Image (tube, rainbow, N blue to C red; front, side, top):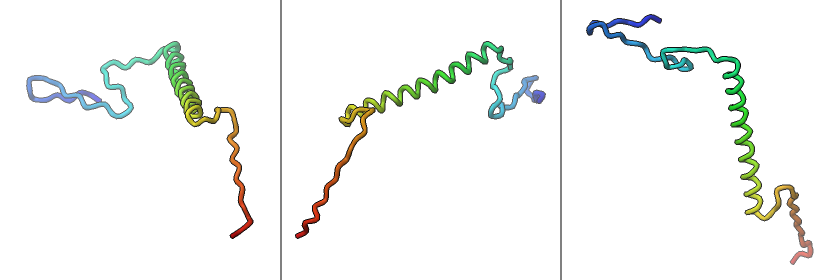
Length: 83
């Protein structure tokens, strides 16, 4: 979209970028190496978040008193002797 000129001494007014468009003047296409590093960084972020969830679950089980790998067994007995 061409820049619209105004009547105030030749200043130009540029429209705001649409959502999803880069906001800068220069738009460069990423090199294959930059794309690969971007993907590795995003996957690394997901792996780190997953690891933090595992650590949080282990810490929660330590506070609870049940080990993370153990199955908690609940035993309930009912007395049928009546009043």
